[in-house]
Image 1 (cartoon, rainbow, N blue to C red):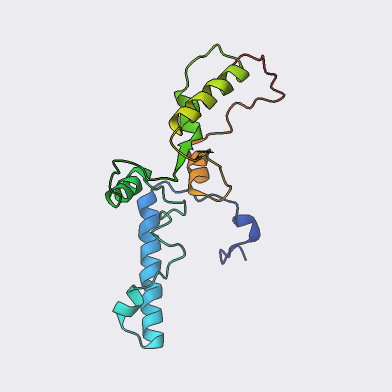
Image 2 (cartoon, rainbow, N blue to C red):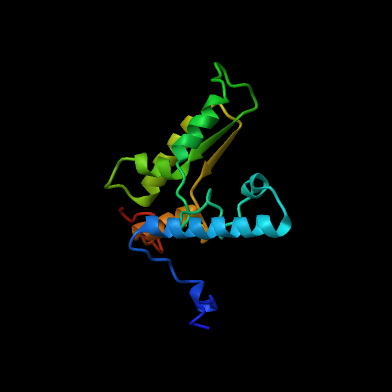
Length: 173
């Protein structure tokens, strides 16, 4: 089985490694086009019909040639969404305020505060931001196992951050 280079269950967890990613992409493209020609000839299809579908092992819009997930640019998506929304002079009621929780935590000042003081100042900022809304939602990021964000963290070599346990109200940060 190893001579035929068949994939085993133990190969699923292995990360692809390549000294030259362009070589991997070219080999993947060569195999992809060979597969397309075979499918087109065996089924008597037009090549334009075959080229309209992804026949590769991975969707190229979601993955790089070496098998890693493609990193997306959130700023591009945000600009496209902002183009479709007109700025409002007044916000009609009822309305809601959505706050990025991690952004709020990172903007906060006061290194020598306790956890209860930090929580009180965060609550004050949240209530000030959503004063005109009927509803306020504070949203924090969640890292899922199979996600582009988690794959990017693995590429950067990041581990989990500082974790606090058994936090007492008077504990200083």
